[in-house]
Length: 415
Image 1: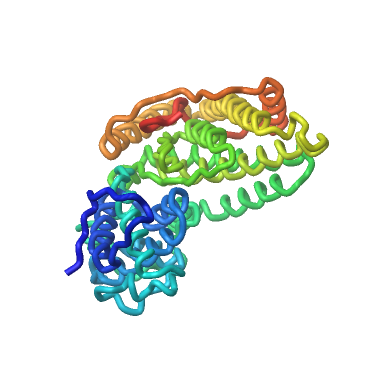
Image 2: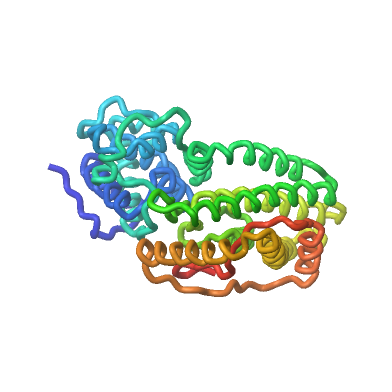
């Protein structure tokens, strides 16, 4: 018989835990995490962020064993596609002893695997609830959605890519617009001329904004089969994590979405309707690329060690860029809304936007519970702030934009 005492504290490195003792507890904590809303890909990322090898490899093996042991009818097809998309090597044998048998592939001795697995168990058990994106294995919702996933239907490289496939499948009119938007943003990201990039970005935003208005009006005139708010989560990584998070909050708020930041996990949840979420992610991704190119250009001509190459300058640059982009998107929203009203849709549009906003708030309250709002705060470099504001001004958004509401929701400890 093997012994396992997760509450027993010993000095790291002074002992070894038999792998077989940890296996059932590691699988149990994964099952608990699925109920807390975590996805396998998010678990792997969190382990990679916070632990050293071979913890990530052990977590990957445990996830593969967890899925292999479950009857197919108890796993949602999106969950199956998600795990398959992670490229995990399927275990040859999932019977007891799978961790010890896999130690060579993990590049560690059985003792190291067992000890690392114990620390992995403890770290995973401390993760909180994040909200459900896919029905977890074993749930009634998972059983109703079980089956083979459609080819290419879902994969979480960015944890929101499934919206692309789902939105295009649900709305044939969106596919050609997305094709044009992606092409325009790709041109904006590749050009070295700021004015040209601004033109491409503005046109892309105009296309998405007009489609968003049409979609909202159609939603308002439809009853019974209307879509409801949903959620996606996006990873935000260093460097300049706070500045990137601020940009994402700003874009979400101006795209009829709300955002919640999980600082301990470097994740941002976006809540809204599918097409609004798609517009927010598309714009954020492009603006982030353009902001990074702009901050690099600001320091390109400066000599090594110059102030323009310092971390403080670049952080302030990106914060200012996000702040100014938010102001300009708000101005654009007013212009687009006024344009819609002048065209005769104003009377229908405003009540629809209010209704959708109330539904997003109600969804957040029901699914995520109480949240607290906190202002971003960090030391600012005056010259970096000024340079970032100028870059945001040059990123001319024209008359394009997404209709939205200000004020992102920030989760516990967020900023």
